[in-house]
Amino acid sequence: MHHKQTIMKKVLTISFFLLLFWNSSAQIPPIYAGLGYNFGRSPLIAFNDFIELYNQDPHKTDNYVFPHGFDKMHWLTGVCFSGGIYLTKSTALELSFSRKFNHTFAYYDPANNPTYLRVDIGIGVATIESALLFPTKYDKLTNSPSIGFAMRKNYYFDR
Image (cartoon, rainbow, N blue to C red):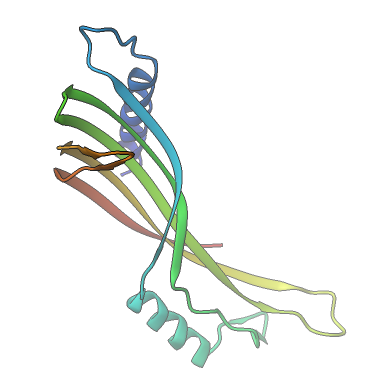
């Protein structure tokens, strides 16, 4: 699986720089690239159910119970990259990548003990999308209905 991720990162990086540094002229359609920050609210039902079960029977490490349990999560935030090329005045081809994540932690911090124990868990979503856009301009606003394909990967981590 790691090998596929490495290949995908290389393809995205090369595609991004090709789109970014493409020399546009009258014969070559204009290109665009974007970098942004995105956020989304989600119920994260399965993840929050896990947190609730974990907090009901806290994990023990070295015979310490974590009195400060995990918080539930509802927001994922992260970065997004996109690049595209206009094929005609009314169609464009776009490739975009976004990665959103969040984490929470539980800890044991005894008042008279220098030992501080902490466990982090998180959830993330990585998405790669390609789309054929049909932009329509309305003064300064552009609406772009599209037909596309998205690949999404959810991942969990703990530290």
